[in-house]
Amino acid sequence: MEFNQINMQTDDCDPDRPAHPRIFLTDEAGKSDRARAVDFPVSVVLPAGGTGERTGLQTPKQFCTFLGRPLISYTVQAFERVSWIQSIVVVVAKENMDLMTDIIQRFQHKKVRVVPGGSTRHRSICNGVLALGGEGEGETAAIDRPKVVIIHDAVRPFVEEDFLYKIAMAAKEQGAAGAIRPLVSTVIATTAEGYLDHSLERAKYRASEMPQGFTFDVIYQAYQRCTESDFEFGTECLHLALQYCGTNAKLIQGPPTLWKVTYKRDLAAAESIIKDTLSRSACIVTGGSAHAATLADALQKAVGALALELEVIPDLMGENSSYLLKEWNFIQVSVDSSCLSEVETLLRDLEAANRALLHPLVVIWVRLSSSDEPSISGREVEPSGIMELASEAKTQNILLYGIEIHQAKDTEQWERSVLKAAEITSALIRDRTPALVGQLLQA
Image (cartoon, rainbow, N blue to C red):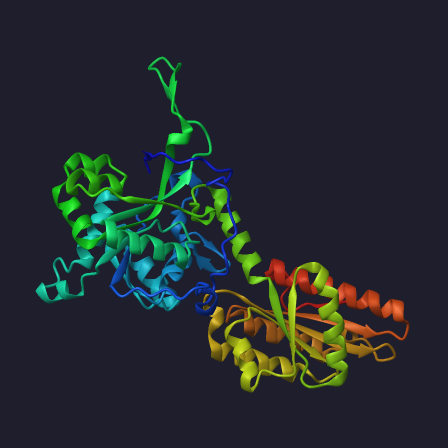
């Protein structure tokens, strides 16, 4: 992206620092605090033809996988969850067409189609715009042309609906709009000999970011009129709109969450953000048992200091079934020795909801045993049973863990056990470690 000269004051935010987005993982969570009404068609072009050389990885960064899912799928979901966006065109290199098609099918993305990219960024974006305009698909396809086209990098997964709304509305009114962020460092120019020539006055400049929005006519005409040199060396769509259509873009300060996955460390940061977002709350199911409810209440109090919110419910029936569609973590508390059936029922309900398709779900079986009862670890049936159950669940992207708590008569010992169970629970939910799946941990 190029730098835009504008008269604005800088702020203290670091635009390159990974920032935590608001909850973005479900349709319910993705809705903004205020109702947003967009009464015109909006489509998205995601250029994803880059090779990812700066990551130092053989796989292009948009196809790198974390938490069992490629980066580009997270970005697609960020747009797919916005009800007023009608379609998404992903532009990839020809050799990655089949890979992208497989991702769409595997993660059941509904609004997406794939088109082949070009040899440069502008050529790829142009192909996406032409696809939205029905080029090569017959005259009837022109009826479905969007009013506004949003262009966004496939490797910026944390864009939020509120900001997309601002871009779409400004683009409709002005013809073009784009995100900007403050510069982190002063930009300098050097001489041919490698000495300082001059520096820019940072207060007058901003970094041009994504997303950017255009009316279809503006971006279409800009690409029709631009030169081969623009196609070959240009990177800034807003500049094309200004130069070839006379459309001066409205520039909107974007949130820190617009950061781009550029280097290998950014992939780890993105994974950390998603894990943190997935790990803020959990649902405890007691099965209606008074003993299980007592333990659930004790766990609820213990995890309060661990930044984990717990909701305690007797079952997942009736109104409580809504938790299946909004929670990512479940704790089944049981008090008898043959209670894996409760976990099996929970797993069946979660598989039917099909939510683990996009993000791994965590299920923790907390089993309460009396101090004079033989340890479950000494039995042959249940340890092997939970391991087998966990192996089956893992194929559905559900991570099943076990914790056993001995019901001690000594109050202090009981409180220590509950606290330890709470710490283990919090760590399992936060880290989502595959190596511990199927293990029965002692608290």
